[in-house]
Length: 616
Image 1 (cartoon, helix red, strand yellow):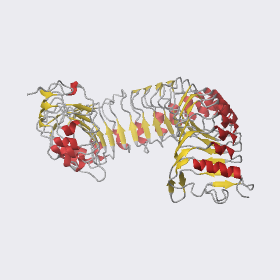
Image 2 (spheres, helix red, strand yellow; image 1 turned 120 degrees about the vertical axis):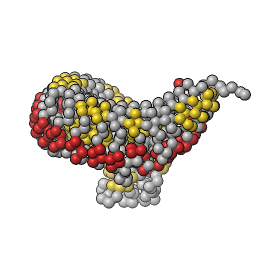
Image 3 (cartoon, helix red, strand yellow; image 1 turned 135 degrees about the horizontal axis):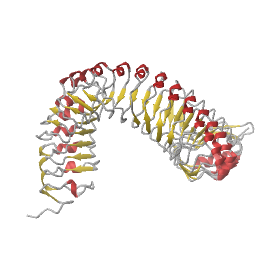
Image 4 (cartoon, one colour; image 1 turned 180 degrees about the vertical axis):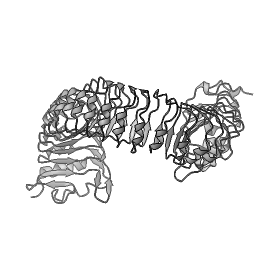
């Protein structure tokens, strides 16, 4: 059968409202051809009525992905396609305006995909007539307002509902508990308020529930334990309070659980030990208290524990030794104390161990740590004293944080054997030595923080370390508050290791000498802090070549001459301070809004924001 004239007219009106179609998705849609047989993306039934309209912006075949866009608005005439079952205009990126109320006339619609566009306005109340709807995705648009309860009530056959990444507000409608067929419910990234409806526990087929990144308050309902099929539960980044209900044990299918960034309190229910399939348990940034239940040790499928930034107390249970699949154990920023169970050395899958900021009173890093094969070891502020343990030299640790402890002595020569290091933080300790020449061997090191120690000697060995292209170029260096001496090497900005550095902090060291001109060659530098370093001479004009600079702090030095115009007019400049130097002359005109305090205590400076220069 030829295409029905009503449907053809509706589709041509849709095309008429498209203002830009770079990939010619609608090229074949011509008035002289048949919309059922000749138009791409259109399919009809035997009677010539359009049943399928699919023109998404993202199409993946086995071999390639075609990614395009279409600009325009949605034609109300689409509502005349009375036999339409599938409407897919997803990922077109640039469809604007409202969802037409007329779409409510599509009573046979089973699939509606309008996600990833720029649609605005609210969800039309007429969508309640979609009584046969199975899947609806309106995510990643600019939709606002409430979700009408009458709409939600009528979608009883829906199996997938995606409204994420919009600006929807109001409460989650209680009739959500009527969507008994639903397997996937994604409302994340909106402005929903109110509490989680109790009826949510009725959704026995639900496998995927994401309500994260909203403003949902109240407590997690006890009824959540009814979601026996649930595999993924994301409630993170809300305002949830109260305890984690003991009924959580009913979520026997759960693999991923993320309740982080809320205000959950009370202790963890021991019934958590019944989540026999759980792999990732993310509870960080809450107000959870009490001891870690030893029942967590029953969860042998766990690969990741993120419990950071809570108020957990007591010892780490020895039952954790059973977690043989564990890859990440992050218990940082709690109030854990007492001895660490030596059996943890048996966790051979462990890649990240973070116990930082707990009053563990370790005194020394336990010897059994050498049995671990961790990639990241974070033990900041855990009470470690004395010298670095020698076994570190044969470890394959890539990220090591031992900051804010009471480590002393020299930085050992064997640090050069730790060639896997990409991140090293030894700040806030009592090291006193120069940097050993073997440091140059750390060819993968990208982030170095050794501030607030008593390191001395020259910086050359750091700046001239080896690289393993494309790896091992510094991203950040913080050497502040030590007793390094200068002068700073002239060719510092030309060293391969420095080529892509974004943050260089050298404040509070007695360098003396000039600031090398080569600093202008650090083309990706964003932060430069050289406060109180005894540097003298002119501020090099070349510093203005480091175009990405947003923070330049050069106060409390002995710089002389004028402030270079190139530096003050850096496009990204937000923070600038040259106070307490010996600078002279007119402050160059500048666009950045800088306070008087940024220039004070330079007797020879004048011009805005300081008092005007005197005419001679």
